[in-house]
Picture (cartoon, rainbow, N blue to C red):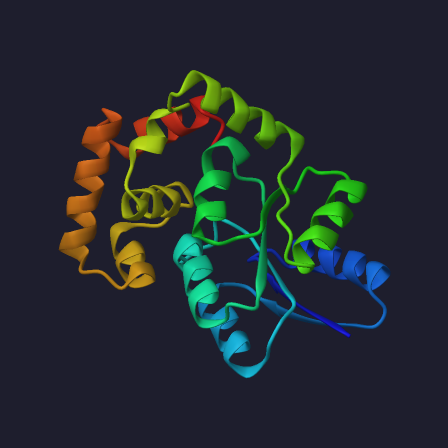
Length: 208
């Protein structure tokens, strides 16, 4: 029997994926977690064949969570399932250890394909991402300014865009508030912006 862990802060999304999984795999054991802390608690109690995880969740460092799972539970496959822009996020999560990155806009057939590949330890890359990677390889260039951020800076950008404040980010990443402030100032400088509104506008221009 296949075991799944759905990590998403939206109940309706978890319910939809649960229904699909029960259609694809009979029987199946499915557990749910609305965020990182709950996901870690589930992982400590049970093993899972596949973790389906959103990218942007309140008080959750999704990138760090992927790295934690890959380190602590190396036999667990991870499929990112998100509305976040594939061209911005996918490469980082694949590098962190996720087996695939799937858009919530994907068709049912594409979702089934991604799940079947990743649950068996194979990598899922959409046609659009494959084309993007090929174009970047040929052009030998970075596609956007967000690619120039460090891992930690990118985590903080993701949390800022999800609506988290400095204190929330400090808690999610287990960092001092002053340290988060320093990272924020540094990434603002790298992106050549001065406030959250400009960050959101820049992110929108790159379809984040």
